[in-house]
Length: 424
Image 1 (tube, one colour):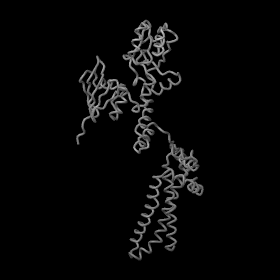
Image 2: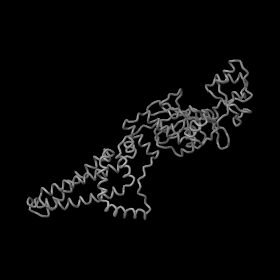
Image 3: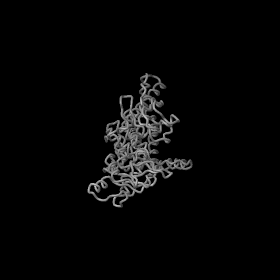
Image 4: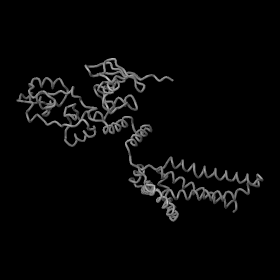
């Protein structure tokens, strides 16, 4: 074989190998979501890529057969065509064979393997849709070979009980990773990233993490005088007030809206807390519900206010639609009193009833020990101290010092959290 003929043959083998290498990486690395979007936008070849990803047996068989055949052919042709000319230069047959082997191997490794794969990896979906139809033609040409090798592989996989169907199910961790990557790339704004993250947190957080606890509930007894009711409604900024029998929160008969009650009082009409026109039935929910579940319950019932009950039938708190949405909106809304206030770069003032999820996020702590055992920063302190906390009690964890600076009876009202300076 002449040098010109051998060179043309090697170039054809080089092009074939580069095509197969690029197609292999592009089709394998193509993201399912992006390919589905391309398909919806009218790129029908994206459907072919998705189908090939789902059943990759024929595709992988063709890649391996072609690449191995090209490597063997290139080695044989290169050895026979180039070695004689190199032998004339070096006057040594063994050396000329080694040099020809290095030249052919290096050329194919660089031009037919490394460069096509890197280009395909950087634009996987675009390259995949452009090369999928030629790859389908190769699969058709090598159908008999595929039938033998792919069939043998399928028999072995079936015997070993191994599934070869590609699984692209999305998990919450996958979505978090995509969001983080989008935020780092600037595709998602910081506020948008927090908003999406908060929505996913709703699946994990229970209603007790954001409820107004029992000791802060303002309620009326059925025997409370109208004058006292009006006085409390004016002093308290709430729109809804529970009504109970015998001044007992375990005997709730409903709730009244301050607007409706005060309107009747201003019109000098006879009004009573037990008036059926004013008293509305309260929605009761278990304390095990997630925020997402209670939001769905608000939607189905048309309510925006619920009483939270534990497994013993005791009222532990109340929650409103506003409470739930404040968690969703997070930093996008401004509250009158922030539960977490950053004083300096390394110190924070934190309300004792702040949900532990908010503390972890604000301080950028990976995790806290046995976090399923408590829901607030106060619970965390009680768990770590193994006693009823008191003022000036401190603990150190994850490079932070947690110090109690104010209490109200047995309740922690405020804490100071300080991050240790990194010593290098």
